[in-house]
Amino acid sequence: MKYKKGDLVKVIELKDGDSYWGVELNETYKVISVCDYCVEIDAGKGDRWMFYSQIKKVKKKKSKKDLRIEELENQVKQMKYRMLLKN
Image (cartoon, rainbow, N blue to C red; front, side, top):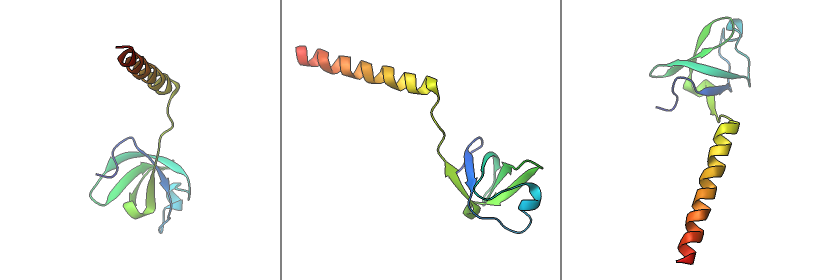
């Protein structure tokens, strides 16, 4: 499936009645549930079902913890590489 619960999506197209539910164009919302052709988002005034063609997945920013873990993993790789060169 393209989307899953907890993903962040950006609205790229509005249909009839979407603005009534608090959905705004080019805003980012959290996915609550997923159906065959629709995604339910937390829209402010209530939950709103949106078609896949109306939304686009947004990449999450990495937290400081994730960045630190990546940095440590890179350091370990460098150490392994240096140890292989010495042998």
